[in-house]
Image (tube, one colour):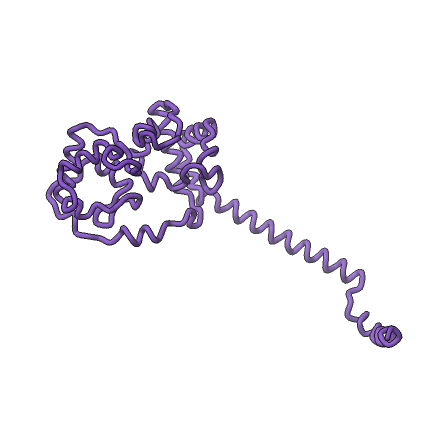
Length: 248
């Protein structure tokens, strides 16, 4: 058996040998391949660096944004939050928080997280000044404008459930200032607004003014464990929102 195999190998040795690269050919193949992929790497690197200013919106990198980044790093916010996919996963992802919540909502929350979610939130109250809060918000706004090729993905299911437009804005009562700056960060109306909480279309048909006032004043007292925050609103602002909701 071994002799037969050896005989076949000897007969085809010359044929097999002619198909193999010589040392000089192998060397040339290695050098040319290395040069080719090195050139490709350099081209891709240059192209990436060329696109960085436009993709990162470098022109919007203001002093406020830079100070906000320093605050973010100094307080180790990534120890709980993620941003652009990096960080911890203990607290919410914040890459698009400016789009989701809006500056007014963020300002109220950062100033006192426990006031908005009594007994629910573990976030530390850092006692930032108004200037520091504005710098942080400017940083989040800049982060949210960076071109990340579709990251993070939008929750298509939530959009499909909440975006059906209803002609609920057919009222002569204008939207109160606090409704536009705070409520729309979570709720939608006629398909416009946030997708975090329920849509408010037809809410007046479900609840009366007294219930809505109690709910806005202290959501946790009406429904323990609710995700609805307790907003710092004056009685006048509450009444304006209740009046508006009662007309839709």
